[in-house]
Structures are given as C-alpha cells and as structure tokens.
Length: 211
Image (cartoon, rainbow, N blue to C red; front, top):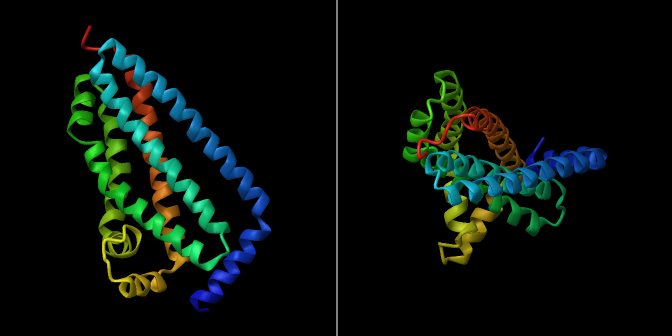
C-alpha cells in the first residue's frame, strides 16, 4: 500500500474513533494545563522566597510539561485535518517542534538541574530512572535529526528563500511518518515527565539549602 492509500486508511480508522480520541486528548490537555497552572504558582512562590535550587528543579519540569502539551495539540490537529495544505503545514510545525524539543532537553536537564539534584540529595535510583528516560529522547534525536532539520530549515522556519525548494520539501513530507514520530517522542516525554514528577515529589520534602 502506498503512502496515499495508507493515509486514506488512517483517516477512515481515525474517523471511526473520533469521539473516543477527542475525549481522551481533551482530558490529556486539561491535565497538562492544570499542571502548568500549579507548577507556575509553585515557581513564583519559590522565586519570592529565594529558593533557587528548588526552582531549578521545577522550571526544568515545567519545560517538559509545556512542550509535551504543545506536541499533543499538534498531533491531534494533524490526525483530524483533511485539507492537504493545512495538513502539511501542521506536519511541518510538528517537525519543527520535534527538532527543538529533542535538541533542547539536554540543556534543560543540564548543569543547573543536575547540580540541584546533587544538592538536594535525590536518590541514585530516581536519577538513574531520569537518565534512562532522557536517553530515549537522545536516541530519537540521533535517529531523526537529519530528516527533521531539513523540514525545519527549508519549509517550517522558511530559512531557504527559494520557494521551489520549499515546495519540493513540502511535497516529500509523509504526514503519517511525522505523526508516528510525534507519537514516539510524545510517549518518551510522558515517561520523562513521570520521572521528573517523581523527583519533584522527592525534593518537595527536602529543606531548601538557602535556609
């Protein structure tokens, strides 16, 4: 079955499950939004009290929640968009987001975050679980960076000013493949978020070193 046939079959199956998936994604997006609200309030409190070490943990975890929320919205929109140009536009947007997320995660969970884990004496097991989850994102980046970067540079960020080149890249986009990649990284972010939440729970009971 060619790409067009596979896409038609996917559209049919997605339509059959539309209400179920709509409800599931709506619940998921509400959870993301509620977490963002709660985490933002906590971070503001930490800032007011000058508890920088705890703030470094929370802001990194908030980043993971925000990008997972953005990606989930785009995935749902791609699954149910039927206009060809809009569908490819959403696919380009997903490719851009996937690239930026996978590239940024190591920095977000980098020096300040790692120092906070050490200072707050996060158990080795929790740190190992987080590293394992992060490695999945790193592997995704290594495997898909070239494809995502071409879409990102040429047709998503419009950095190539040759419109014909842009159209060539857009025509080559496989929406189902981009959807698959979105779901793959989305699942990895779910796992990463769960490990980050475990660390938040652990460190919430730890006295701030600032006093």
